[in-house]
Length: 168
Image (cartoon, helix red, strand yellow):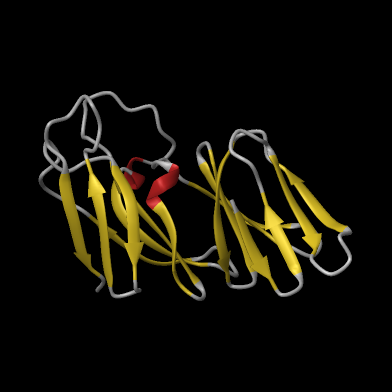
């Protein structure tokens, strides 16, 4: 996975805890971020590099490697995307159960729009209903107005669903 930020290439490899930033013209390493729980390089938003780790979303400066912000995230790493130039979008469609071992129960079934620069949650909408049929958000895409994705796509579930959410 990689993204281009000006003259820098920011990259990671699946399974690697390292995110590196290399100047494209000189080949020099600009900075490196070590995140042992790293799952995905999400992209660029608000001038920051966004990564998804186990239990967290993290933003860092691609020039210095300094962490800009960090937020709890209980959803799958595929349920995070860059929705607009300066927004990060998370969709959590956890199946409701009686046992929870999470920091914040409100993260289970919601959509969050996060400012990519500051990490501020700009808008949060709880999703109610269809808990037994609509869960495990995967393969999301968005133009900032409509979120399209798949849910329940696994060998264990015969109930694969197309998700279409209209942004408020």
